[in-house]
Amino acid sequence: MLSIPKSLLLAVCLSAAAIAQAQVSVPIPAFTPYTQQCTVCHNAYPPGMLSATAWQQLMADMPSHFGGSVMVNVDTQNDISDWLQKNAGTFAPAATQDPPQHRITQSDWWQAIHRNSKKIPATFWKKPMRVSASNCSACHAQAATGEFNGKTAKVPK
Image 1: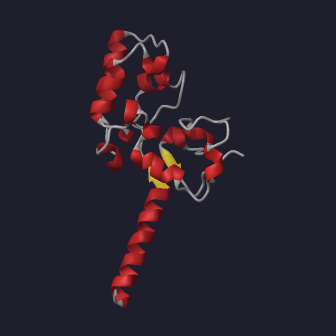
Image 2: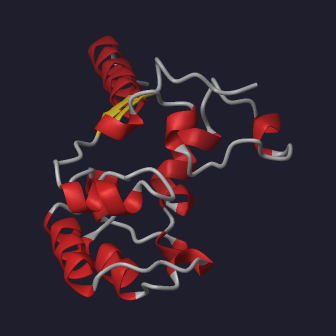
Image 3: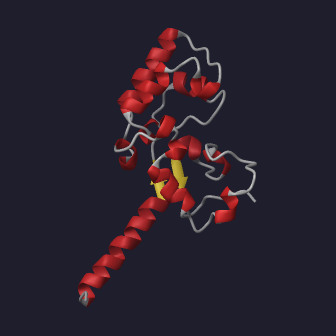
C-alpha cells in the first residue's frame, strides 16, 4: 500500500498531467506564405503537431493533398516545406509518432485527448458530423494562434 506522501505525490502528478493536457499551447511562428496558402482550405495547423518527416512527406505529396487538387508555386512550396520541417515536433507527443496518412486527428495523442474528454460525450463521435474533427477552431476559438485550451473549448451541439 502507498504511504500518504506517495499517494499525495501521485495525485498531484496525475492532476498536473490532466491540466497540462487540457491547456495545450503549440505556437505557430509567423510565416505569411504558410498562412496565405494553407488557410485557403483549412486551419493553419501548428507545425509542432507533426514531425519533420511527416511534414516533408505531406508537402512532397502536393498537388494531390488529401485527394484535393492543390496548386502552389514550386518555390513557395519548398519554402513552406522547409519552414514546416524546421518548426516541426515542438509538441512532445507529436515528435514521437507519425499518425496514419499524417492526419493529426488520427494520432494517438489527439485521440486520447478528444475521445476521452469529459466535455465531448461518446455519442458526439457517432452522429453525422456537422463539424469536421480537423476543424480545430470549431471548438477552440484561439486555434489560429496555437491555443488549444480544453477548459475554454466549446463543443458544438
